[in-house]
Image 1 (tube, protein in one colour):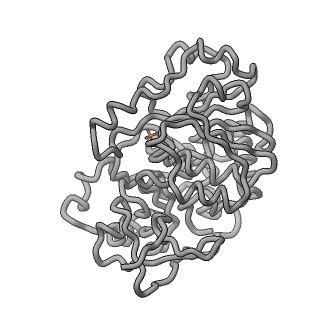
Image 2 (spheres, rainbow, N blue to C red):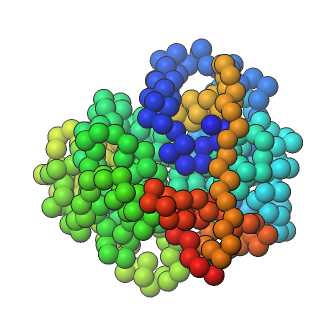
Length: 359
Ligand code: CP
């Protein structure tokens, strides 16, 4: 694996090893503090971030490496019209590894196809956020001691919640995992994630009522309703307060339930919940740094062999198109439309996973 674009690029064995490394970093930080000396991480953030960018940067510094990059699109040459592919090809002249966030779905994959150095998807639109999942997994492992046999409630914006899509991608591979999807009708899980669950025979149920679902949950994953992804502010205003977790709503929750949230939060978890011992979201942010350290080492092949170059490039299929207006292939006009087949043989866009349609 050269890059981390989708959490499913990592097998359960890979995830076990990465969490093992992160736990060793926590136990013996001095053993890791010089491993990236002479290496540079570029953080190319075309969308706002606090945790992901700063934890990547802290991770590289704590490994003895250095950091360069930008934190907003308008301070890069993207503002002058430079493509994602060209940006990646230029930055690989200056850095050894890139972590990038972009509002368009599939943009980090385009960077990975075009760059020789490892590319890490730090969030692509409402699609995926695999390194948040690494933070989630280490938190689950430290709190619950296992990945299997858990009932996981996902609550809030399941449509645009990229962290939800990646967490489902990771946790679906473990035996005994069941998902409870808690969202308004308008913010249900996208078709391609739902289809993956159905094709994999993964048990899930939908429940509009958080309090009704609460007693059965081992993990509750709250999410923010994402204003920046809505075309209509009216719709956002109508949906933004759909679920607010309060101390009172936790009264029927299991005593060892884990409350996760990728953060930032707006008001979907009352600050009074922060002092509940089940609240894990700030330790989750800290765990993200250790997992990003483990990931940087893995992708740079430190110590040991460098991973093989493997980027899925899909195939061109005459007569098929991706029509997802949030996909990078809709914006970067010279990007070839490419597809790959899912488990049932249906063609999906290589970049955003939307079902392909005829032209
Ligand atoms: N969880 C997360 O991605 O936070 P940031 O947007 O602050 O990076």
